[in-house]
Image 1 (tube, rainbow, N blue to C red):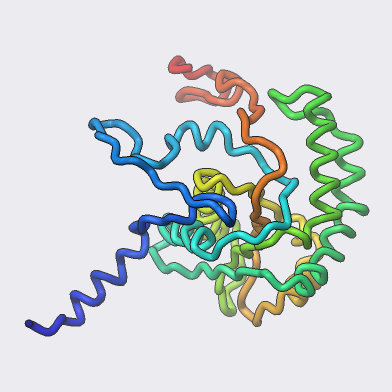
Image 2: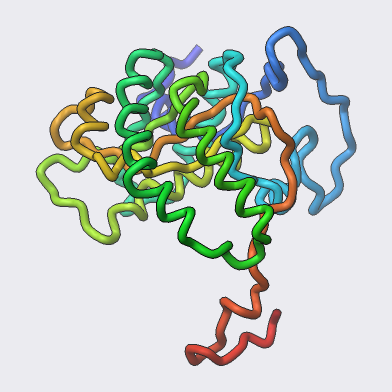
Length: 257
C-alpha cells in the first residue's frame, strides 16, 4: 500500500465542513433513523429540513430546558460555523464551549445588570418592530426576561470569538464571525435545538470576558445559549420586503417584490 502523502492528509483535513451521518438526532434516550429516500434533483437532502423553511422558522428560542445536549450535536453545530465565509479565509474565529455552571453564573451577573440598567428600560419605552403585534412584543419581552434570569441554566453556551491580537477591531471585524454565528443558529434549528444570538454581555465587555477567561487579544462577539426548547418553532415576525428593498436609487421600490 502506498503511504499517504502530506497533500492527501491536508485534503482530508479540509473536509471538516462535510457533515457526517449522526444517530444522535433527538433528546437523550431516543434515536431516529431516517429511511432511504429517493432524491430528485432540487429536493432537499434526506433527513434535513429545507433550508428556506429552516430560515423562516428560526425563532429566537429563549426558554430552554436544562437537559444535557449530546456533544455530537454540538460538534455538528460547530462544524457548520467553521464552514462560514470569513475575510481572506484567515479563520481567526475561535469558539469557546461553556458547560461549567460557575463560569456561566459569573457572566450572568453582568448579563442581568445590562438588562436591568439598559435593555429592560429600552424595551418598556419601545414600540413593536415591523411585523410584530403589541401582544407578540409583550411575549418577546417576557421571554427576554426569562432568558435573563435563566441564562446560566442553558446546558451549553457557544461563545463566538475572534483572535485579533494587537489589531484593534474595526467596523468590518464582525464580517469574519457573524456568518459563522448564523450558520450555527441554522444548524441548531435543523437539529431541533433552540438557540438565540445575544450580545448583551458586551455592555460589560471587560467584566464578562474576564469571567469567561478570555486571553489578551481575543474578543467575544456573541454568546449562543443552546438547549432543547420549551416552546415550538414557528414563523418569524418580519415586516414586508416592499418596505425595505429598493432598486437602483434609495427609496425607489424594487419591482421584484
